[in-house]
Structures are given as C-alpha cells and as structure tokens.
Length: 496
Image (cartoon, rainbow, N blue to C red):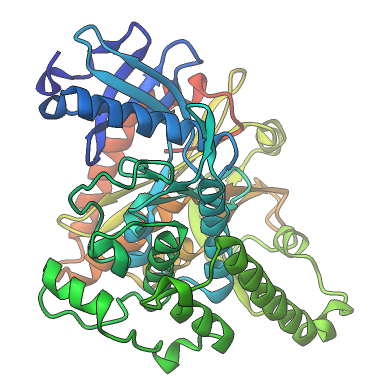
C-alpha cells in the first residue's frame, strides 16, 4: 500500500478506518481515523513516508513512537500514543489521541492572549518539558529527553468538556536522548527560528537548549513577533540573530509584568550557563507571577464580593420576551448586558410541555458560513432524545448588519452561549435555559468569517435572501449526517 493509495476505504490492520489527511510531519503523514474496535472513536495515525522506508528511518520512527508513549504516560501535556504497528506492506505507523483544536501558531494568529492565559500556557509547557527532561526508562536506563524542535506549530491547544484549555506537546521525531553517543555527528536538525545558539552551531545539547526554544515560544506568544527584525528568512540570518543579536524588549503597550519580561529574556541568553538551569525553576517563577496577579485582581474586586447581585442565570430567567417579536415558534439571537458584561444568547418560544421534555436532551451546535453573494452564518442549535427526536433551532446571522457583527464578535470571544426558552402564551419571563459550549475551533472560524465579511463589498442587500436560502438547503442535506453523529456519540454535548 503506497501513500498515494490510502483512502477512506482503507482499513489499517483491520481496525483503523482512515478518513482524511490532517497533517504532515517530518517523517510521515498524519491521518484522522476511526477506531472500529473502540466505539468508533476518532484517533490520529502517523504513517512513515514511503520515501523514508529504510532501516535507519524506521528505527527513528519507532523511537519517536516509544518516546512519545512513555512520556505521555507521565504528563497530560504530551500527546498520548496508544498503539504501534506495521501494515500489510510492512510500513510502520503509530496511533495517537485525536486532538480537536488547533496549534499555537494558528491560535496566536487569530486570538489575543491575556497575561493570565499566557501564564497558564507557559506553566503547561513547562510541565511537559520538565517531564521530558527528567527522562524515561529506555533500553535499561533512565534517559533524559531533549525535544529539539519546540515551536508553536508543535504545540496543540484543545479544550475539555468544561472549557479548560489544555496544551499538548507534539512531534518528538527529532528528540534526542542524552545517553546517545556524543561522538556521533549529525547534520543540523530543528527549526532555525526557534533553535538555540548551540543547536544552530551543531554543538552538543542538554536541557538548556529546550529552555532557549521555550523562551522563543513565550516571546512569540506575547508579542506576536520575534525578538529581532529579520529582513530575510534564511538560516544565515537566524544564525546571526541567535548567536550575535540582543533580543528586543517587549513593546511597552503590551504591559508585560517586569518580572515576566526579565524571565523570558533570561531564557534567551546566548550562553546556556546564563539561562535558568532547569524548567522547574521557570515553573516556580511563572506560578509566583500568576499568584501575584491573581492576588492583585482579588484585592481590586473585594468591594464587589459582598454586594448581593442577581446571579446571571436568574437575571436571564427573569428576562421578558421582546415586544417587537411575534409570540410564535421562532428562533432569534439576543445580546444581554449584565454586570457590565455582554452575553450571547439564542431565544426560542415553544410549548411549555416541549420545553420540559427538552431539559435533559443531548445538545449539539454548529456554525456554517456562506460568503457569496452575501456573508451570512447559520448558527445551529439542536436538542435531541431518542423519544422526542430532534428539535432544530437554526438562527441566521447577517454579517452586514450591526446585530450580526456584534453577535459573531461576541461568540468568537466567548466560551459559551445561552439558549433561553419562552413558553407560548407566557412572554413575561423565560421558562428555562441551557448553556452551550463554543469550542476553540468554532471561535477561530467565527473570527475568520467576520474578517472575510469585512472585506466584502455588498451592492444589494436583497442578496442576503439568496445566502440564507443556500444555508437552509445545506442544513437539510446535513440533517441525516448530524443525526447519525448524535446517535453514535456517548456525550451530552456535541460540536459540529
């Protein structure tokens, strides 16, 4: 089986149904697949490139899988490897957990990162790297692991069911075990933008090389640029920057805490001896900065703690059905202002009995975009149970209207929205509500769609009718697939 022959019909080792290509690594191609043995769960499978099918590369591929598997047993911040094997043509592959999110490179391009969010990210990266540097039991001895290619594209961001953001370190394909023979020489391996001075000079490396790369990653997350202005993206220019140029301080408008800036620039020292000597040292200082910021924030808000304010959900339940909306079974977007913050919601009016029966339904949401001839988003909410079937609650956001733009911007920055139920004949307050998670990938898509819509010049507003009709047609075609996805799932909330 060649790489070009792989398709949806392929069943790898009679277990993994290959679905689509989701990435390309230094050594192979990564596929999304279904594990037909384990409740048809999604997994990621990396298959060694046919062009690298020699014993040296096979051994390196095997070691990548082994190192990742052993490290992931000890850290939740390293991608988990669950299986290794060879196909019928003796091409090696290994199976990883499927990560539904995006790498930090893509995330940083679209989203802003607050200081507290950054400190959480940095702490998670440190925990993963500390696990690697502490070593694994490999071939009879404890071997510290140096990643050698730490960069935003090798760090994946996902969200769990509670909305907590979790970082996963990927791609130990060029990782080095400290016990490797130091007498062996090899060509430079790594990414010039993020590698340490000693790495780009071809010297022996230890954990402090990863600390330099970690400093580069941290700088880039906060500043969205590198510590130097590189005019030409070439190895020689990066060599000069890493070995000769002094990193620039952070722009003052970012308001980076001085102790944090000092720590990051310390990681970028040219000499390994002048950097923090362990990742654990960095972790301690990051956590101390986070505690200080949290304490200051807590102190500033103490005056509001004792104020008996109406909880958000109670406020929403007491909201009235808008007077300008007909009292019938419709769905529409609504923004609520509460305690100086705005919250996205979608409102619907149903029969009182239907509302009660839907309270514990499986929840599903999805966003679809139509750019031509008019930018519009279908915001789909679905409630499902085997007894009542599906209740489809589609809501359309015109991205050339003020409410549509506000709602999309709000959803792209929020981790959840509320569905408010109003009973027919009782518009005075909401009968019930449910909250829905807006996943990271969904928020990224919303930001990108809003950006696209801003660039489009619309000559005729009546073209919105065409886009809305197209989205309705798309929904009708998608309904069987959505229902199948819901019925296969064993979770309470699903995201398309």
